[in-house]
Length: 393
Ligand SMILES: [Mn+2]
Image (cartoon, rainbow, N blue to C red):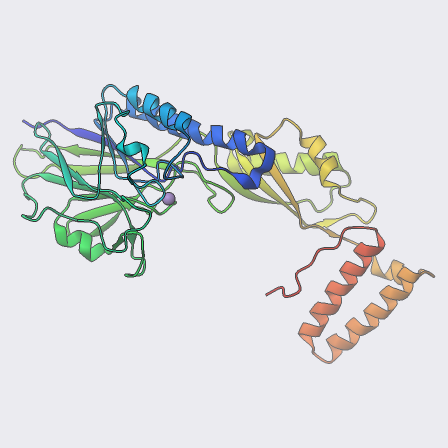
C-alpha cells in the first residue's frame, strides 16, 4: 500500500530585492518579503508537507547578501519533516560563485544544477526530477526528461524555472505545453512568471506557475500564494496515484491598487474617511495590513485645495504602507468665473469661446486640448504645480 505525498510549490520570492522605489521604506518592504517566506515555512509545517518545491529566483541576486543566505539556510533548516528541492532560476543561477555551491545547506535541501537529477519516494511511488540555471541565461532549453524516458507506473513530477509559451528565442529556458506533455510527466512545477497561472493541462501533463508569494511593487498587485498538491494512491492500490491541487493564499501583505472617488469631500478628514471606508469594503478586514497605492479620483469642491502631505497626516498609523496619487479635478463653476473682472475671468471667457467653436465645428481633438488647457490654466492660477503629458496617447 502506497502512502500519500504532499508538496508545497513556490518560486520567484526574489529575496533581497532592493525595493529602491520605496526609498526610506525599502527596509520595511525587505522585511515584509522575508515574512512571506516565513509564512511558507509555517504552512509546510501545518500541512506536514513531504516536499517544498522552490522553482527558482529564491534570491533576487546571483550572489545575495551573506546574512540573508544564512537566514534562509536557518529557516529551511527548521523544516524537519519536509525535504526541500531547489531549481535555481535566472536571478539566482547556481554559477561558480553562487551560495548554492557552498556546503552551507541543511542535508534535506537538494539544489539542482544543469543536469537532470532525480529524487524518489518509493513508499509513495513518486519520482521528482529537476534541473536549474547555472548562468543568468539558458537560451538552449534545460534537459526535460531522462534519456531512457520516464517509467509511466510512477507519478513523475518535474520542477524547473522557464519561460512557457514565450518566444522560442527566449533566453530563459524556452518551453511549450507540447514539449512538457511530450515527456509524459504527470505534473510540472514552473517558476519565472510572477502570477499564479491556474492549473493547465496538455494531454496527461498538468502544469502551473505558483507566482511570487509577495509582489515587488504596484505592477505585481493582488493576493499571492503557493500551490499545495497531494499525490494520493489510487483505489484499489493499482495503477497510478492521483493528484489533487489547489492554490493557497499566503497570510500576509499584498500590493493593492485602489481608486477612491472623493467627489463631495470637503476637507482632508472626509477624504481620509472615504479612503478607509472604500478599502474596508473592497479588501475586507485585512485592509490595514497591505501596501496600497491609492488613486484619488473625482471632483473636489472649488474651495477645497487638496494637499497630499496634509492628507498623509490624517492617515498616519492607519495603513501598513500607502502611497497617494492625486487624480482629482477641481470642480469649478465656470459661469461664475467667466463673470469675474480679472485675468482669470478673461482667460475663462476666451477658453470657453474657443471650446464652443471647436464643439460646433466637430473638432474633437482640438476640443480635448482646449479643455486640458483650461484645467491647467486654472490650476496654474491657483498656484498649483503643473504636470502633464505632452502626448496623452
Ligand atoms: Mn522571477
